[in-house]
Image (cartoon, rainbow, N blue to C red; front, top):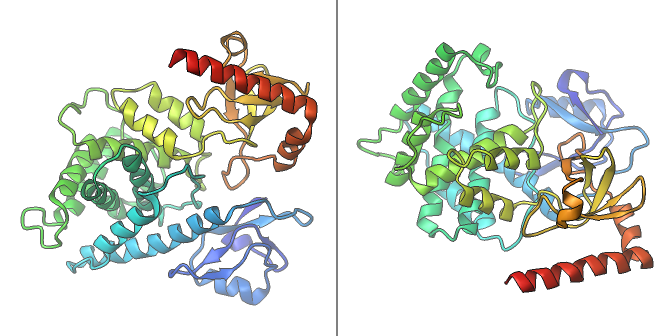
Length: 389
């Protein structure tokens, strides 16, 4: 699989990911072989590019939930764009409250972890895609923390609005990403404050929840830099959630200008800075998304490559893995093993998904000797957990 920019799309290429219109209706399914007319239609959607399959490459596995996730992201992005355009023109964002409720219903009530993936972003659509990503992550975190529905709706609404000002930041600054000067940082803050003024917080004509406006204010004041001197003692819980969701979505997102971090790298970074990213919020994030599910391929610190054969629901850093090189199992929750071998990082596919070796996983489950070994590890862990409890 590879990413091809719009100007390089050619007839005969096969789509690796579906393409949806602004209403979430699928226009082209995976494995569609593009014609010249298809390409003309794709150009009408101002896509920055598409993922294509290599000539002999089979379709990678993808679940129904993952497909729906991508569909909803596209649908939400266009709905949010319409609302923000209305605000910029002094018109009522009629869909904003309904959009927040839709995100809550889909992602703020889940009883299981999801595979969080993002579409590739450009400077022109970054704000919309990022805001939708943060809203989805925040909904899942808030649900894991058992927050009330009204609080969740306020957090989701704030996620849609706190980066509104980036729509007005000059393109030459946006292209720099986070590599900006202090003066450019001040310029960005001024644009964000200017956009916040369009919300008319004093009269609140758009009926935005007051606590959502307070969260937006705190996010703008904090800025993007990881400033350890910022006093966060009086922050709302929603602002802490937005800070974690913002960081996670930004560093793991695909773009044309930077290589994304993996989920495990992003979360490990936040764990090292609890004064900025509260531990309970980061923990709720790790409870909401798959970081290293069974079947994902990983790099170990001893140089070996391995596959996760059993995820560790209590600590994603310490799963049971199967080494490809030596066909050997390592229980990374065992201190004697973990002192010498840890997870360095997960292996990624071109579209930033966790690389999953389904075939090897099936072989693992059907191998009697290996199955007996992993059952032994599982029973050992159960006894240890029971003793600790």
